[in-house]
Length: 312
Image 1 (tube, helix red, strand yellow):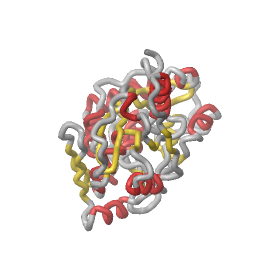
Image 2: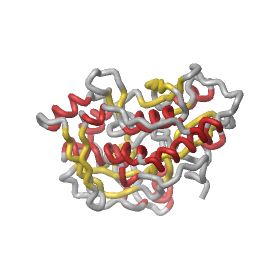
Image 3: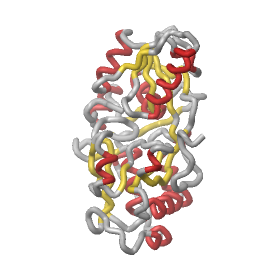
């Protein structure tokens, strides 16, 4: 998933036209959320979770003693990640979730911006304790990593506001279209799977389009060089509301879970899951998702490595 270099909170406010309050209105069943970008720079904190702390294996060694080192996206993907006014502090729902986990475990949070390509190797090599990267649970990923779920992952198809396309919900709807999709993502697997079905049925192939950044994606959509973007609903909805230049015309066929990702078998996933459940119960979790406009993707309970994409 590739995005533009970080836009600061101030930069986003400028785009909105002189106010730091963004009214985010997605075309998803009347979903309306109000995001106060200035206020959202203030961290939401929670207390220590004794149960979660006792679940940390006695022999577990954190990358940095006393700190929870978590990889997050180095690229701009609001509402998941963006930079605060100081142009260096990462804010967004991913950073907020990371802080709740660190607080619950009695640790100082250390966020490390990284690329999508880097987090798997970084976790395996012991560079990070965990990654919070909008990583969906899949059968294949569970072979190498453990997961503690924290959000529902919904995918959306977005088109130019003036596009004649009204619905993309099944394989034949993408036949002959040019669709922007991220390389190595679950949405790419879905799109290519639909394309295989279409080809088998004699339909016109879809053309996946891979772009270098979000600016290129926006230009391609608005110029008509591509027909649609297929990616995380939370990001697509945010952009659609921010500019009014795109709209959602469909969702992906599967709903997955996004999870904090750890090295397989190291015992950290369970205490993280317990930490998230504590935050769910005390209300701090809801505060995070509500203030970033992701309240329709809340979970009621975090679980460790549940069935994921490919387990069906």
